[in-house]
Image 1: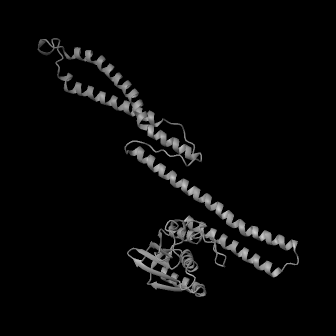
Image 2: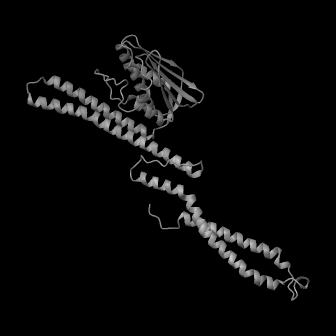
Image 3: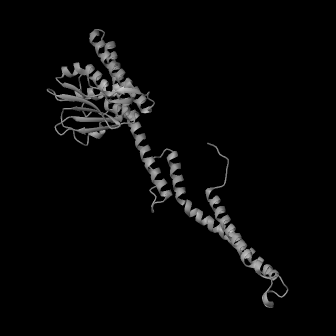
Length: 359
């Protein structure tokens, strides 16, 4: 933004200091005149015939007062310039750091020393903002690199299959078409997941009343065949739990949680429990599943894009693209909620989603 040149903050403070001293000096001289000089008799003999009269005092005091006023003005300008420079030195550091960040370097930190004051609080807040920006940019760069890698994989497989088919016309066409369809479906699923993640990250979701218990029941009906196929017991408990948000996004959130709980479970005899309840002014959704023990240090990374649990790489039809919990986390943030992941001592995971409740 282009602005017209103006006075610097240091010059403004200097003029303010000097002006304050000049006004204080003028008030002091006024007090001397009002409370002293005007009571001196203006007679040729003065006071009691021995003291100087008003005329003599005024003409003697005026040059000295003028010199004092000039000294106060010069002292105010010089002293104000020095004091303003010392006071604004921290602001100069903050400005330099902002300029460095504006040029693309987010690793610089001010780390201003000294006791807490307004400038140091501003510097600490700026350092915190730079840290968050650096983390966000690094996360976006990792996301872009991982997304590019994930999208490149099915495209490279498709090209390889087509090259093989072109070089070997006698190859089984049905097998080729089936493999191409599988790869293409995976690429479409990944693209749709990326679009959904981008949409929920923008936070511009529609708001309507949604009953999480009904969403949980609909999800359970949809994923019941998958659970039965894997020998997983799927239960939905709880009562009506109303919240405000996008019904489509909340359905995807619950679906991702339940599907994740079903897929990453025990080979035989596993359970998944979905519970909804209104707790105070919050609507709570809990998804708990059995499974293998998870290292506590791994849990915070599960919501990062393209993280597949304990570095799990599945080869079945539910391999996923590593965006399930990342999408859940993004949807929860878009609805002003919180997401907690806690590993169960016996194995598996307990996921708790808290969203603002509505009557």
